[in-house]
Image (cartoon, rainbow, N blue to C red; front, top):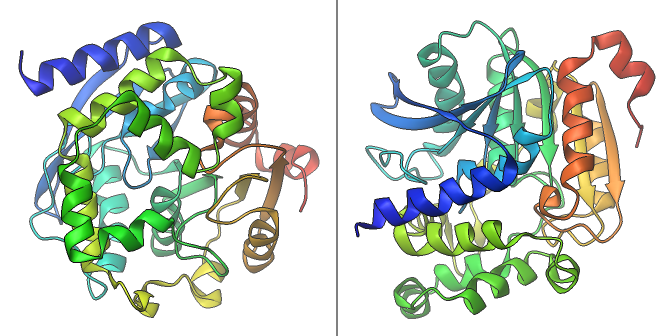
Amino acid sequence: MTTERRYREAEGRLFDDAGITPREHHVTLRTLGTQCRVLEVGSGRPVLFLPGGPNAAATWAYVAGRTRGVRWLLVDRPGTGLSEPPREVPTPATLPTFVEALVGDLLDGLGLDRAGIAGSSFGGYCALRGAAAHPDRVSAVLLAGCPAFVPGWTAPSFFTLLRTPLIGRLLLSLPVTDASARLGLRQMGHARSLAEGTISAPMLDWVRTWQRDTETMRHDAAMIVACGTRRDGFAPELDLTASTLGAVRAPVRIQIGTDDVVGGPEVAARLASLLPDASVETWEHAGHLPWLDRPLETAAGAELHFGASSAERRLRSPRA
């Protein structure tokens, strides 16, 4: 059995458990010169979902299966899931324009004049930069967990290990097991949900399978290494500044867990203060990927944010 077949089978079991049957598209990214896989679920207002790094589109399966009035377009970013890799590994000099072009290319490739964006971690960074660069094309932004490169964020500790030459190579060569997949989730703040069985068996199986049977980890690790050093962390030119955040005209909803190791409620509140129109939802005992701990609440917030009018959002959204 090929690695792609094993991955698709694990993905299919996850989709069955989530009650969805995605329609698969392969979208040419004209500016970036590569192609990415997009999974379409539901109908209604179009919303891109951009996963963090390393991760892939199917992580959003349970949210997509519980949301009404939203046409989800779940994206395997270049180099993740079953998408082609980028032509060149992004560096500090090219990453900001890379993610801005990614958003524009996806909208063009999908034939969308305007859409919402949901993003997690690095995907949240893409969402914010994309919204600032394309203000007339992004209708609303949902940030599930603390985005990368916002003021006060903390990079996951294993990023430092990846940038340490010998240890990084060792980490990428180790066999993927159920125990190692669970360890990664615990390190991201999901220990409580793992102990209580909140994270489903099909999701855990899929997490293990994308780590083992796709090139996601290798490609995102290459970007992590290229964009920083072991001693100094990430290059400062990647940071989302007050001026960039101030250019985001779309309303932003931030869903943050108290166990988010990248940035908790204080970081989310600071981020919201720098955005023209933002609200914060805080969830006790949720980690960096809060939909794993609170899928129903994530879906309800997404449905409200993307399905409601601007006036309804202002009336009903929680404030920081």
